[in-house]
Amino acid sequence: MNLESASYKNTIDSGVQEYRETPHSVLVDVRTSQEYNQGHIPGSINIPLQEITEIFQRIPDKNTPLFVYCHSGMRSAKAADILTRAGYQAVKNIGGIMLYNGSLEL
Image (cartoon, rainbow, N blue to C red; front, side, top):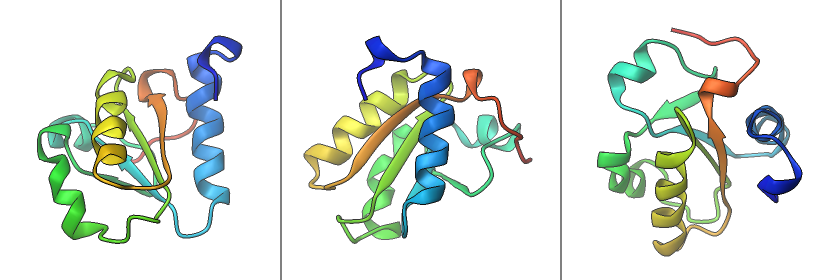
C-alpha cells in the first residue's frame, strides 16, 4: 500500500482487517514485552524487534503471511525489512498501534 495515498490510521486499521481475512496469517507485534502487556491487538503474537530472529523457530514456513506492527511504524518497518531479507515471502508493515481504532486486549 502506498502510504502517500492513505493515512497511517487507515493503514493499520485496514492492515488488521486484511490480516483477519488472510488464511494462515500471523499478526506480529514487535514492541517490547512491557509495551505488549500494556495492550495489544487481539490475536497478535509478541516478538520484540531485538529478538526478531526468534521468528525463525516460531514461524519456520517462510510462505506464512506476516502482518507486522509496533507503536509508530518505525520498528515494524525495520522488522519487515529484516524478515523480507531473511526470505519471508509475504511481509506487510501495517504501521503503528498508536493510530489503531479497534479494541485492545491486555
